[in-house]
Each structure stands twice: as C-alpha cells, then as structure tokens.
Length: 270
Image 1 (cartoon, rainbow, N blue to C red):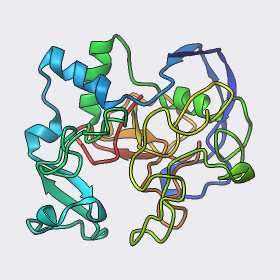
Image 2 (cartoon, helix red, strand yellow):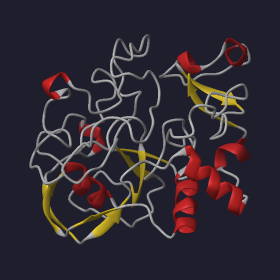
Image 3 (cartoon, one colour):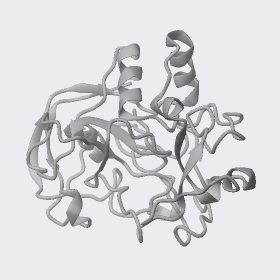
Image 4 (spheres, one colour):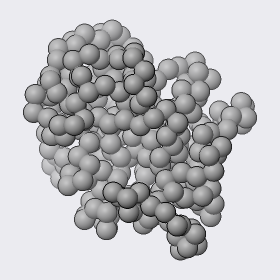
C-alpha cells in the first residue's frame, strides 16, 4: 500500500466532457492522509479471500454476468438469447463470474495476476473488510489519481501516450467492432503492467478495469463523500473497454455508477 500525505487539490473539472456524469464544477477539496493499494486486487489475492472465507459473490449467486460479445467463445454465443438494447455487444452470459470471466468454458489460467472481475460493490466491500481495509472515498481516489498535478486529464498529464509510450490499457481501434491491442492487450492486463502512472507510484488507476468507490452516487460534484443512499455507488478509472468515441471515462475527473449488486465484467476495486 502507499501512504498519501494530506493536502488540498482541485476535484472535478470546469470543462466537463460527459455532462450527465456530474464531472463539474471544479472544487478545492482537502483530503486527510490515507493508505491506498498500489495495484488492483488480483485474482490470486481474491482466491485467498474466497478460500479462507468461503465467500460467494453476487455473480455466482445470480448465475449470470455481462460480457462483451468479442470475448465470448462460439459455444457461449450459441446460448445467448438476449442483449442490452442500447448496447447489443453487451451480453448476459450464464456462468460468467470471477472464476470464469467469459463464461463456463473460461478460467483463470495464465490470468492469476490479472485483476479480479465480475465483483459487485458488495463483493468488494466484503473483501476489504476481510483484509482489514476499506474502499476509498471518491475524493481520495481522485486525489491519488491526480498525483499532485493540477487540471490534467490523466495521472501523468494531458497526452494519452507521452513520447509514444503506453501508460494504460484502453480500447484501440473502432469500438465495439475491433480492439487492435496497440497497448499490448485486447482485454485485461496484469495488475503490475505499464509504468507507474504518477509520482505516487500507482499502476492502472485508469484503464484496465473500473474501481469501486465507497460513496453513493450524486451528480453534485461539489459535495464529495456523499452518504445519502441514492441506490447507486460511484466507480472510477474506466476500463480496457473505454474508447474516446464511446466511453471517454479514463480521465481523473470522469466518473460513473452502478448498483451495489452490479457485477458487470469490468467492475473492480483497489
């Protein structure tokens, strides 16, 4: 874990890109010192948690979770009868869970150091309780993401690929038709992949997989640490499925939400 010093920073932005997400207004926020994991929680760490507690995730109890069509085998696709109306590539897959990321014919082989996926906010919170930790507040996550920089899009600055180098795992190509994998990965990547994203030393805070936040969702960005139950929890950081043309949410100020029981493929946590 990394200990971050207390300090003030500008949270949000006065130049919002996705207006409905409540990215604005920019607010000067004070944050007390706190600890945050350097890496996303890996399948290896989550396996230890499950082995010791016999915990059953929401996705396992529901029996289904959502997976992108390009990631599914022909066998899995043959049994799909539904899709999300506004996103036909987003499929409810029987047997998809953290052990079987793309359905019953997939496993964690060669992905033990990739981030655990198909975890709901409830699952993430239970893991944190077991580990003696907690989910970060939105202001803490964004403070860590910004790395001391002011009014920058990404943890390291404003360029997606400074000096031609990749610092994150996002979608390259035409979404959702083809991911060229220009950054080295079409889907998720190991938690320790890519350079450290800012001076604090975090990896994959943006890109790779979404991170769950403790706060309840509100579009009033001037009130961080929201405690009113709005029915949805905040998530930050974007994922490998994010592309500038579709889901430009891999910026420090960007944000989104899901219900606490949502176990979509890209939801994850630190």
